[in-house]
Structures are given as C-alpha cells and as structure tokens.
Image 1 (cartoon, helix red, strand yellow):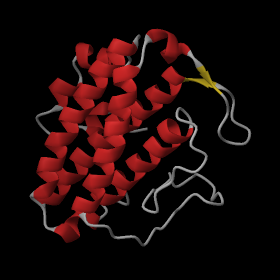
Image 2: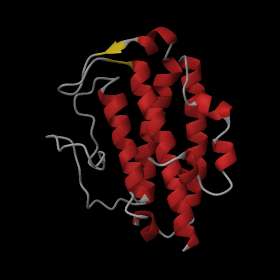
Image 3: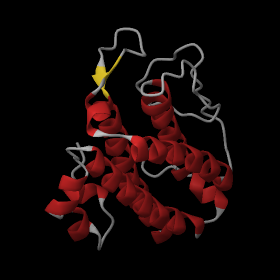
Length: 191
C-alpha cells in the first residue's frame, strides 16, 4: 500500500499531513462535506494548472504502469457517475462513454470501458466540471438528516448505504487520485 509519503510530490508533504486537513477529509456533518469539497475543488484547480503546462501527448502517458492524467480524470467521472448520479440520484444509467471503471471491476452490460479512448484535456475538463458541479449542488442542498439517510442498493449484491458513505467514497477517490496525479505530473515534468 502506498503511503502518504509515496503519493505526495516533493515540498507538499508537510501540507498534506496536517492533522486539520486530514480531519477535514473525514467530515462529520453536511457543513463538513461542503468544506471538504471546497478544498478538493481548489486542490484540483492547482493540479489542472500543472497539467496544462505539459504537451497533450504526455497527459496520455502512464507513469510506472499507473493511469495517465487523462485516464485519472476519466476514472473520477466514473466515480461520480457511480456514487452520486447512480447511487444518490438513482439514475439507473448515468454513464458517459468516457467513464473509466477501476481495473478490477468486472465488465457490466451498459457500463463503458473504452481503454483506447484518447479524449483531449479540454473535453475531460468540461465533463469533470459538470460532475463536480453536480456534487457541489447536492452538497449545497444537503442537511445532516439527509446525509444520514439510507440509499437502496444500486448494484446487484450491494447493501444499502448512507448518503454519507457514498459521499465519503467520492471524497476519498478525489483526494487519493489527485495525489497520484501530482506524483505522476512531477515525474513527467522531471523527464
């Protein structure tokens, strides 16, 4: 398992390890989720600014067998589609053709997995902006009672989950994949 030390780019480890920030990513109430999402949005803005410096082909390049920057964005769209659009908003088929499920997930009819897709950065950023706005809208309207509410299973064999659990998964994925992206952008710019 990668540690925070392995995932953080040089010079940012101290900021990432602050207890306050780590605690913020484990919100206890709706206000906490709104605060955490605001942090995620600001951090991703910085990461995207770094990515824009690279030539387009490098954004499709994998580092040490990990997903490319574009593939990471595609995966995060899938995460939002699965845990927000499908689970929370109960859309039975929220998938975008550019969604990229995690590698271990078995193929499922109707869920895209186009490993050869090579979308442009701007196309992915537009798609991500739409999904991030959806999360922000849900959080803006969310209260603590709704956060604790249960969602019926949206996948065969899945158990009921709370809205809190679904949103925590989204926060965890956003946080971790931004760290991976920063690590890989550092490697690409160091070549």
